Amino acid sequence: MAQQMDLTEQLRPLLLWFSRRFNPQRFFIVLTLVLFLVAWNRGIALLYGMVSLLIALLAVSYLLPGLNIRKLQVKLPTHLQCHAGQMLTLPLQLFSRTPCQHISINTDHRFPADDASQAAFAPYVDGEANVDLRLVCKQRGDYSIDQLTASSDFPFGIHTAQRTIDCSRCRVLVYPRTFRISQLPGFNSRSSSFHGQRIINLPHADEEYAGAREYRHGDSLKHIHWGASAKHQELIVREFESYDQPAMLIILNCNADDDHGSAPDSCFEYSVEIAASLMLFASHQGIAVELIAESASGFHLSLAPGENVSEYHLGQFAQMKADGDRDYVQQVISVCSRFHHIDSVVTFLPQHTLGTHWLDTKNHVDIRFDEASFINRSMAPSAAKASRSGTRVTYTVPWGHPLEHLFDASQ
Image (tube, rainbow, N blue to C red; front, side, top):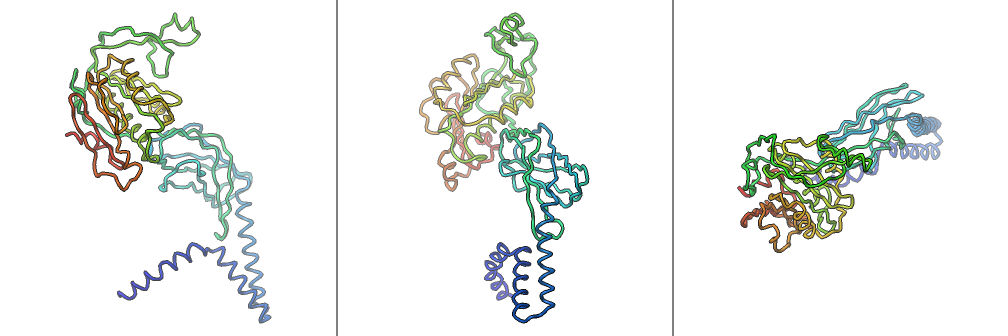
């Protein structure tokens, strides 16, 4: 038995080589050539007949699959969304003026589909048919699907023909992964809401007028400044500062030089996942949130106390990129000065940043990434580390650490 297993292991490389280089198509071609040489050498008429049949089989196998899909057209929905790592069902409408059979349809290489994705299969299309393409997108982002790849090996399965089909554009927003946060250590000033108790907002909170700005999707209509809107011919809303409600300021680091590793396991992707999860936590706890991301496009997300995280917020997270060039420390100083009334701040400072004296008066959660582990994954520590200094809690996050256990590090 042991000798048989050793022989199997010795033959495994040869079998792998054979399976990679020989398929049904090559097998029939080689068989045809061998039979032709034998027939030519021996003059056997029966072998000539077999060669003719094999040539006819190969010709049909090469021609019919291409003809089978040449008239195929596909229509897509205009907009879909899902979370990274989850299954996305993409409904396809197939049209063909001639009957076609045994068709597989998949996305092209531009869409980052995971290996767990399942190609759509249509056994028969005569006029119109509906099938579902199931995709698992491993990377958050804003994608467009306007081309699909149709393939068919009908009728004999010897040769597979492929055709790229231009179709109606479908925009796919892939939201970041999120995780549940039960409590957030380090926020301990005005409310216990950061430790698992939901806040009930008072309807007459003390507020101070802070200015006006352009209307953004999700703003309350009751805050529209109608006079300024009529003057500027666009919607203008009033901004208020509330001093009796807890609030959180999240400042994302979008500096391209601080993003180490490759997506979806890069420093910036981890930052987006943490920030989105913090916003969901704040929404559940009734905490106001201001999120600033100074990328090339620039993002400012606001969440009022008790407001739910909407598809708009998640869509903004899907579009964020680490393409900024402003020094992150200077950005933090500027943003904290602008939102001086918020005393709870979350930052993503580079690992070796020294001194955070400008935040000494605030509750500060400082998330830093073990940059060496993102550059060389073999150097990744086994777990995240947490340290406290006054009102600041610093988390050092290595590559591969399960983020759902990040804030457990300080327990």
